[in-house]
Length: 238
Image 1: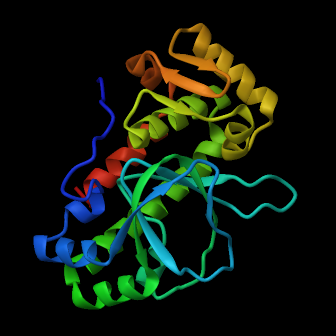
Image 2: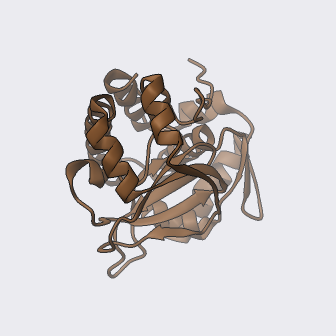
């Protein structure tokens, strides 16, 4: 079945916030700054205090395991369906993962203090974030299984679909080095997988600029983790 990229919705352009009652939306918006996130920007490192939360609209952000004897591994990818800084909803004010902007675009930024006050004033926000954290746990578990059991080509197709959804565009920029780090594989493996997808005319890749040419074909090439992770979000939050 052909699946179109998820579009932004509601006055915020963020699906989490768009599902809140209007008075909660207004309260949160009054305490947010509209900022531009830039590809390659680091929003936080493990062990740092969470001083701000972000609700992406047309930007997207990778949450990556701390580098040790490798470059790290992406745990999940967050765009306008979610937020950065979710541990605050559990009373945890420490960043647990390396937080890296993958796609340039706007986001709502809110101080941790204002976010804590909003949580105390809105049962709806609390319920929404409880469900969102359940989604993140499910997706992170799925990502572990995907990394262990699925071939690089299928995982790359899945990552490109997820990025397309969050970029709200058929075109976005990502290098082979970044792809290798996010998928936890060698650069040569990503290069070969990208060449295969390009040879099948599913994508076009030039100097880090990726264009999705055939979303239906790319969906068929991806592992079933893509559909499963999207389905979990719908079952719990939509």
